Image 1 (cartoon, helix red, strand yellow):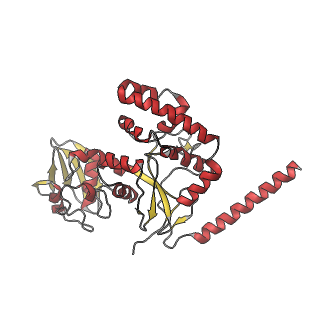
Image 2 (cartoon, helix red, strand yellow):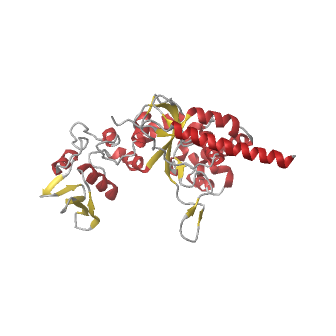
Image 3 (cartoon, rainbow, N blue to C red):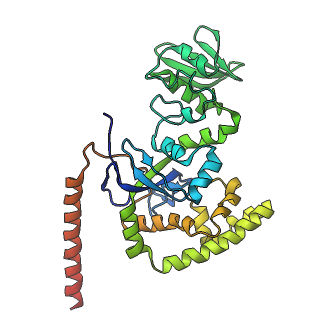
Length: 346
């Protein structure tokens, strides 16, 4: 019950339980390259909607949107350093796509100081007393204080978040379950009930991240036949220059300014969402080609007319017949084009 497939962000094929996969964490891109006269954005590059947060991790699809048996790498070690938890748990918290305190999610249970006493993980809790289990104090009926803020229940399952002086931060939002109210409270106040302040970066960041699954076999095939080219030389040279700049950044905060002015050579760093104040930590990749998998993935997507975007959709039993039909008609079109090109050459 509840099983589902996801789709490969490169090929659109279904990913089934047991398939070897990659997963790249994504964060919203700050701006689009171009906006037309209607205000709509025009997408010219694969990474205009989302930026990779770090290089991909690889493992096995474990059903229900999870990745299992994640391979240890520089990226997994950096995930663990950044989020203070095992990399596989963090990746699956992101892949769950749930709100911070969701009763179906995996984020809050990772970070709650007393997860066994919290009632927010129970299924579809509507009892407001559950707020007390994560540290809210009942000041009066349906008014609960946590730190310098108040969460108040209004009529018809609507809620409000206020300061202690009564200023409204968020007004009249409706929820069905208590965990939704607590998630909204956390988002409005940057305060995280029941969670230690040392984990504040993690719980602020994970809900903002999404991710893209892809089949490892597709990635490997395109890497061999599409990406292995002059792009490899460019990436190697860019990485060498980037490492030099990161080393300067470690020794002098002023060097951070270089990252914004060195131009195309630093697209590798400019196109990721990993926080600039932690950029020196990317030196962990200094003697590795692992970091270039970011550019490798973007090149693949550009070459196949795809965008970096979350890929969680997938039919319960897969969509292989539809994928086969798509592949067949695509192949026919390509063969017709090739025939036309050959006729023109003749």
